[in-house]
Length: 199
Image (cartoon, rainbow, N blue to C red):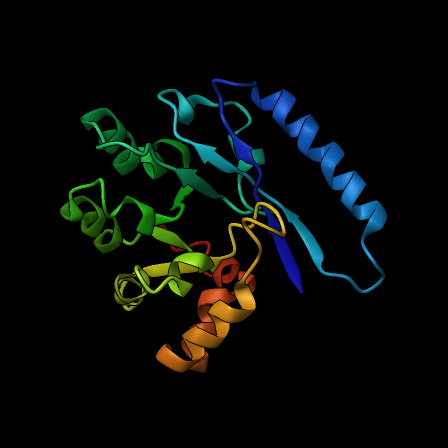
């Protein structure tokens, strides 16, 4: 009943005010065609890390649905001390909790201990439905979901190459982890209710 909209924000490509204006225009266009009784539309962003992120003046507007949770995409290369130090201190510096996007994608390029550190520190993590549905990555993904705080989301970009396969992912999660766990992983409300839980 709810769709969280998370367009990519790349600071090196556009300013936050320009991005937010473009996002608002896109939301208005969606609202015009949303059918009566259609899903609620919640604004957010998938923010690619950049060095001055903690100083971004419009940071709260980039958060998920009026919460103080920010969906953060880390670099697709080994994380430097600068990135890690900023990540570890992000909540203390901003009061905003980072939610790490598609963490399972980093398994092949990062030291696994770094990912385990983020999980054990209590940071919320997001996993893509497609990763769960892939036979190549399913086992690792299910293992990750058994510890820590997770969202499972579609990461839908379109209806062809990157469709929303949440229904299939939900069915898999219910079979493998049980209905209660699946509902918790897929529920927007379950995560917003726990917003006050900082890492």
